[in-house]
Length: 546
Image 1 (cartoon, rainbow, N blue to C red):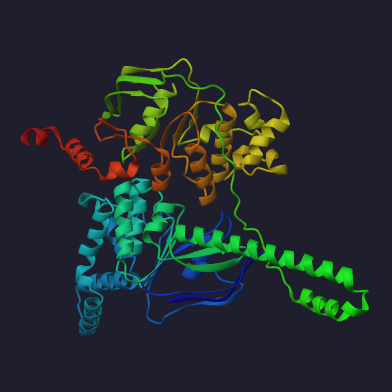
Image 2: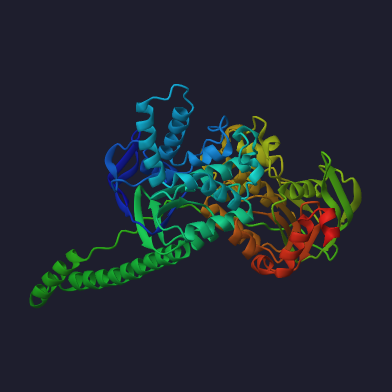
């Protein structure tokens, strides 16, 4: 068990947390939720001991080991992958290294023998002989191939490093596991593996995530941070949302009844306070009035942007025709003879691990890259707006937010432009902030403002949910659901894809396309799709053998 006891954290004059008392017990998985800036990651750092409190303390059951997901992707660059995972249990790794150093001595003494014997005993108690196989099993589950297990961390890609650091946190079945955004940069198979791992994990888990589907799948409890307090709910994210909304509704109804009672008492007192025969009754009602207390309805610190894409023109029947389109990059076939036709009601999710192929395809459709072969044709009634995965060029200037958005608006009126910024929570002086210094989430909100102001009837979005908080993801999700035009998009957010898309496309390794008119969940459950993905992963020689 791990608990926070009267924890207060002040940053300058601001109290981020105030007298927080909460217990996290064994066998439960807690989803830590709250608005951006509420202090979710900060609270995990307090629990892990990386950050000191201003007041109060953190207590852990004696003898229990705590593990947390490292955020520094370069910290272990000098170490082999397998060693990095085993470092998740620091004491076990220390024993292994000390043992190796003793056995490597040329002048092995009696004292060395005694020490080695002590270490071997502790090593066996910690299941040290299974350490390498356990670490390898975690890596394989997350999609790190066996040939990489002895490579240096510095040779891995960013997404591979994320998986290794996650395996490190999970290694050795820690008693308390803290995970800050563990699904970021994970592909679908890795996320599914992690979900099953956490569902079956017997100890305490506290996880921060913006993935609603993930939280619903793994969490037994929800800890909601709002205004420096943490309220604990039994149940997953959806249960928290329903419970919190029900609580607000009940408080409003109770207050309404109290207000009606107050009005009734006040009217009686006003009418009969000067009447001698009714004075006792009036006095009694005054006492009753003084006892009525309205429930405090403090608004949540959560802020939901208003996302509404309104096309300037209705789209026609001819939307997009792609014919025999191919592209090779650095000797690798990214797109291989792709053909399809879009319908006016299509909302297409591009899914799967081949993210480079999707990004390349989107760039070709937007005229930023040329195909090697084949062609595509947009319908004459179409207009397009694009959300790129890498938006660095968009913000490599010294424009203010207001000026930056104005350049994309047909109407140059400042009030009109600021209206779109206001929808995305840029209020007042925010409009004069320079785009160069914006955070990742602020840049995403700027790009969505640009898409709204464009009036396009076709939206292409490459990972728009990255860097957004839960509230912004929900608002974007709802905005796309009601959008009357065509959408081509990709996202790692399961619920976002499931509720938005009516057509699924997957570009397989080697560049072949699977195209299915179906929901995301139906696509994932399809045996036919699984067989096709397996076939395309085989080499040409293996296919011939089969």
